[in-house]
Image 1 (cartoon, rainbow over the protein chains, first blue to last red):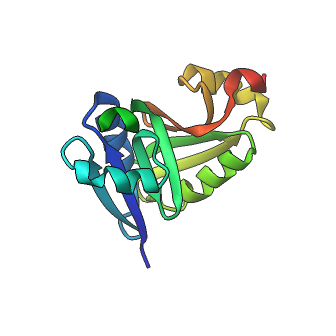
Image 2: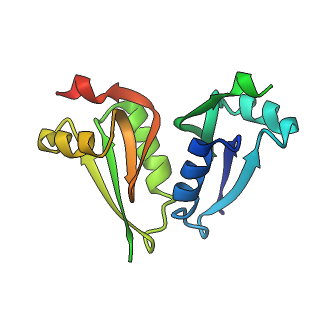
Amino acid sequence: MKTKATFYHAGCPICVSAEQSLAAVLDTEKVDLEIVHLGEQSGRLDDAENAGVESVPALVLGGETLHINFGAALADLR
Amino acid sequence: MKTKATFYHAGCPICVSAEQSLAAVLDTEKVDLEIVHLGEQSGRLDDAENAGVESVPALVLGGETLHINFGAALADLR
């Protein structure tokens, strides 16, 4: 079964750069990757917060939340 | 050609957790992954610093340095 992965970002340069680097090297045989732009999909802010996301860009990978560098605080996207 | 990736860590729980999650889903057809324990390989601290690593765990992926969560500052490993 594939691991569910969600990459949350907000379109910031740091977000886009991290997304391009990381998404390119994830094994699509192992990971089912969804990319969520929280600036455009504000309905997903609660999902992100519930997964423990405090800032973007972040990758929620299975049960683990990985904050990758720092683009913007989640609180500032509301 | 494979992208060179170096995962720097220091054996901390946050480091190990991030390593296990992320290393498991990297595409080994695309990435040549090296894992460096800076606590045991202190000779690599300069490499890490030159790559822009400020804290561990961090993944240097091609030319980009991704700080993943926060385990320890690089300065505290010297």
